Length: 79
Ligand SMILES: [Zn+2]
Image 1: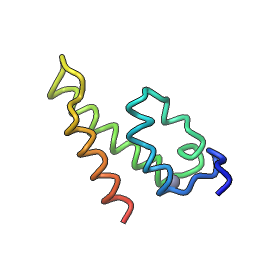
Image 2: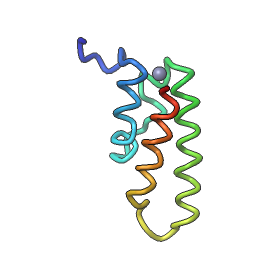
Image 3: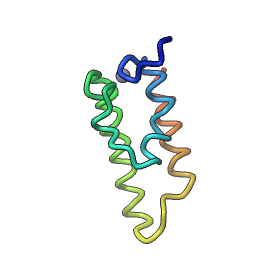
Image 4: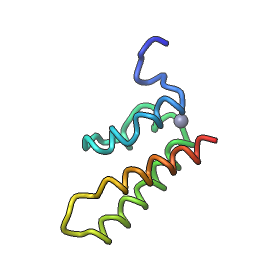
């Protein structure tokens, strides 16, 4: 492991993903996403979940359960 952010494995990237999204990072521009079709598809799926959550809870911050759902979606995807 060199720690180069552009050379993450999918599992490493996906482990960081909820944190990246939660910190307001532009995840779609992440070097791993740009180079990885699989994670780009995963991200699109997560954005659909996040968008649905915003529609369900328009006036509040996404509750912790949303992130729990996203994390479990990532874990399913990673199998
Ligand atoms: Zn990937």
